[in-house]
Image (cartoon, one colour):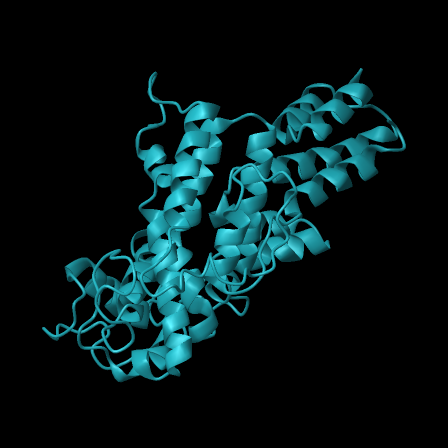
Length: 346
């Protein structure tokens, strides 16, 4: 019967199946209106679980609930000068959502999707580290006031390669043009902004050679805007950026590149994911020459679940952000609302 089936599917977070069940077996009479509401909720939950971030704002428009407000905050704005800046203002809501998706994908026994989400977590991790210093998450509407000097120029003293120079330049004017240009920036450039900022964070005026792991290009001639914060702030930022880059180049992220979608081979097993994560965590927690690996210092408090699917992932994200971050409850809240909507008939 639909009642017991819906309960079982919601317990397993199979929102796609709930939507299909409600669509194919619609209740009649007085229950029809509630079923339509539950179907809309289940469809929304499925799209959020799929991390359909481009449409988070559209999904949220149909609902006036706390979870819908949090979902709006996880969205990249569709218009360049929207008042709600969402994930351009702060990446914290989006990271809470990605951590929640990781947990639910693990509960659904979907190893490939766990790997895909772990890969996505690395996309904006350097920007998450910079957020506490910039005061925003790389919002192109505010970047012009946050950076300066050689940022986005062709100055030969800037160590950015051509791709990062283009990204830096576009970040200064992406919101001053039309919608097409802004959308192109989000699609092709914004995910590289963290790489550009990462080079600026790891400058020679802050950290000496050999003090910390070599994780990529550093800046020998930092701009004044990059060295304006106090030394303790800069050293902390450098550490969090290096930790982010260690994760981006880790076995768990590399596993995604060996698991192509639409291929008969290469889909990772649970054991392969566990092994990759253990190797990743071992690399992340190696002592540094200066003794300042932030994961080995006083831990940032976090709301990690007791049996986290990738133990320590929430701690890593919290440490990089410099603030507590754990799995959110957006998708679970939608599931709770589906159950509440249907409970009179279940």
